[in-house]
Length: 242
Ligand code: ATP
Ligand code: TYD
Image 1 (cartoon, rainbow, N blue to C red):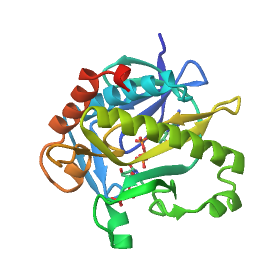
Image 2: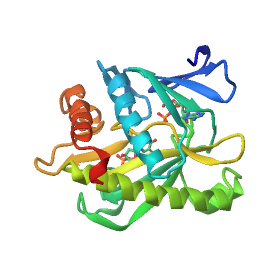
Image 3: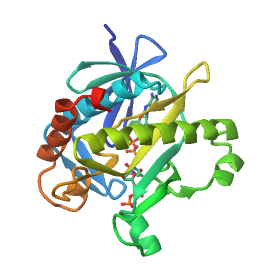
Image 4: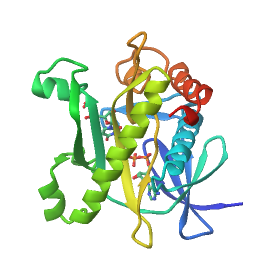
């Protein structure tokens, strides 16, 4: 049984603890929801456990599909045990359909299909407001090597293909989402952080309703039943269908 020791970091959605094993971290998923780079904040009942449950389910499935991930175990409702990684300081955003600021930036129709899907990189820095970064900027600032980024692109395409199909099977369109990667002690690149509706834009194919954090960002009602609906659908129809 892994035991947590020191609190290393309190983020906007998780607390990260060291454990007795230097290569293993304890992640506590909290109920805090933030938007607008932390300016809008609230405590949402059960969000931590719902995000932990959805993340656990998707990390397990992606691992089974051959994607290297940081996932080790989920010993209780809000905890995930993960391999400690040196994080690439990048938010890797994938867009399958136009939404959010992409719509205003290019003045295109919301939900226009983006084919091929777009990969964007944002530099993880709250002080700088997570600025957009292109590949040349990433290499010049030595945030990742060309080889690491090639691997990020290839894994991201595989993850997008898997998740798009998986959500489609349960009547949900995966509009866009954000991933984070890190490297383990031996240099292996792994998918890290979380896989939840905090970081995905999901749309119900029947009703057109948002099933993600946009409900909170845009004050469109309670978040808990929306996240519960995503979890229920994924649990009811398992990965064997994908
Ligand atoms: P944001 O919400 O913008 O991602 P945050 O730091 O507030 O930022 P949290 O999810 O609350 O996000 O915090 C979790 C932190 O742990 C993040 O900084 C994330 O990059 C980091 N992290 C995720 N997985 C690992 C891992 N396997 N090893 C080390 N750090 C990790
Ligand atoms: P983003 O471009 O920030 O959203 P918007 O288009 O509303 O400005 O995000 C696109 C997707 O990536 C969306 O599903 C949210 C997710 N995302 C995060 O979860 N965290 C982030 O820091 C970023 C940049 C994106």
